[in-house]
Amino acid sequence: MRIPPLKAIMAFECIARTKSVNRAAEEMGLTASAVSHQLSNLESIIGQPLFQRTGRGLILTLTGERYLSDVSGSLADLSRATERASRRDEVDILRVHSSPTFGLMWLVPRLTSFQEINGDIQLNLACSYENVSFTNGMYDIDIRHGYGEWSNVDVKTIRGETIAPLASPAYLARHPVTNPEDLLTHRLINSETPLVQWRQWFGRVGVSAAQKTFDFSFDRSYLSIETAALGLGIALESLMVASSKIAEGLLVPVFDTRYAVEVGAHHLVYPSPNAELSRVSRFLSWIDRELEKSRANALG
Image 1 (tube, one colour):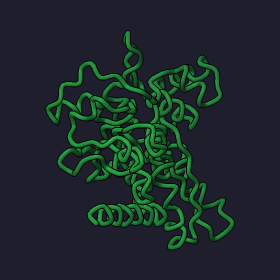
Image 2: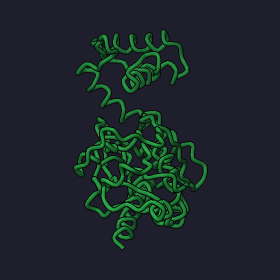
Image 3: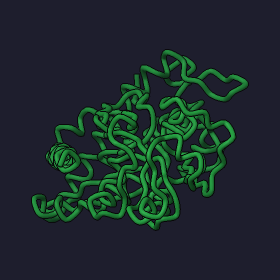
């Protein structure tokens, strides 16, 4: 059987990832009809449908799932081979994609530490809330926020992350807090991002908060963390993500660890072959060391 055109395979991967011919067309810079043509060509060569068309969109068939698993690694291998062949200097480029809050609040403040021990690696960082594809070779590793349910990639969940109320020392000096019930009379900052929301947290600590309203509400955690650091209220956020602000003394946990909720919200995601790349393995080791340092500092 002849090998299908590379453009057809890339169109298939893009449709499978975006679950939409139109979104795949936008990403590839083609018309929707051109992308559909590439998919039809591929299905004709394979002799079986790769997608089921349903009222909710496109769903991979069993053949499509197997084919996606097989070709994703091959596309990534081609990208890495091209990068190695075109490299003209000794600098290794590590391409990291991250959710914006983790990238801004946790990763960027620690880049000096990374550079000190990895001076031969150029770290390229991009941030967005999209889960990126690895098949085009644009990224080596993705730091994602969510529930960790992704297929065809290795998922290394960051352990020990907790969510708890945070406020500035100045705010707490002006508005003392003794117990969780006190928060019902305080300025609370709402963020749509954390896996544990205020009403869930109140429910866990046995406080009825059905009528509680918020003074601020944001769709990004870094906005609620910055707002709390300015002394404008109390945020319910990840202590790990806010660790730089805590280390600087700009934020403190309102309560002790009994009122913190453990979550597995951040994940290091990468194709299995990428773990064998020196730049990726060194980055993962550095992340582990930095997390251990943060935990040790949190324990005093």
